[in-house]
Image 1 (spheres, helix red, strand yellow):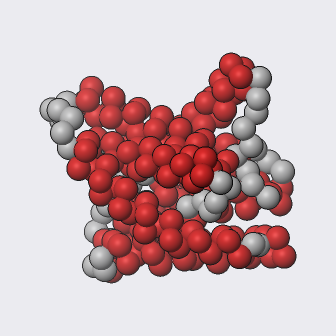
Image 2 (cartoon, one colour):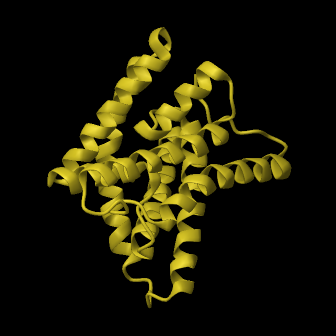
Length: 215
């Protein structure tokens, strides 16, 4: 159990570093954060509150998808949101010490690091089977009922988040790209792809396959 908790905490922190690098890159928020940020822009409500509302909605979506397969421990995802928020603040502080000159090259490097760390964090914390973040929880729920690959569903889910954010800002905000920029769109397709490559590489090296989906 201690090993699982350590894997969960480490994975969650690595994922928060991925979010921090995406923010510092100035190329757009991560796909899963785009809707919360869009809500904050449109309503002028604190992003912490909109993030909680959005994540609570995602837990409800999981219930509707899983129905009888929905386990009570999934409600722990609300606690994860608080922990992840703290880690994100800490990660932003740590990443701020890394030199960033605002050049296009540095933006691309930071975005690439963000994509890799986000995928690696998911790969580490999800198999611990404690409680996923609501975004990954939704992806996992779809994987459970469809038996599709987690990484494939992740790509579609992130793309959907980006599209919804664009529509929201286009309809109710002054700028359609208020919460989404090129980095967000790239991340929507590349995080799931990178996660698949990490999983395949791990299986090739160790001969073992890590199951990201927990039923």
